[in-house]
Image 1 (cartoon, rainbow, N blue to C red):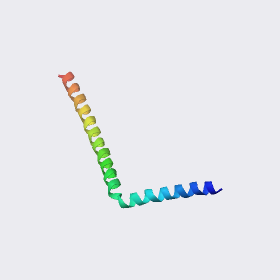
Image 2 (image 1 turned 45 degrees about the vertical axis):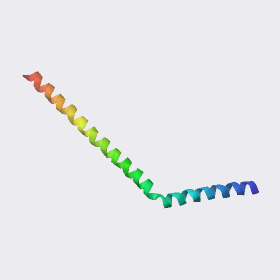
Image 3 (image 1 turned 90 degrees about the vertical axis):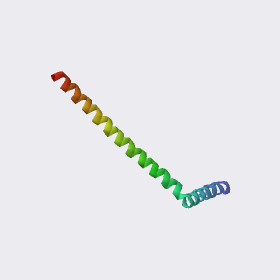
Image 4 (image 1 turned 30 degrees about the horizontal axis):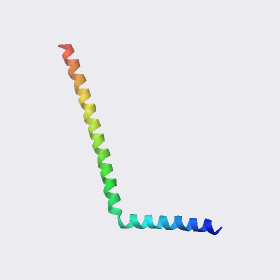
Length: 67
């Protein structure tokens, strides 16, 4: 039983160290999260422009066929 308690204590101390690190270095995680949000926004903008280019190409092809 003492071994089990030492394992539980070790896990609790490890979690405390991790929370302490995050508390003192929260700006790193905020920077990473902000970068990821910018990345997702950038991808959505490029996807919209790609869809718009496809529509413009389709319209150009239809106009070329009619004339």
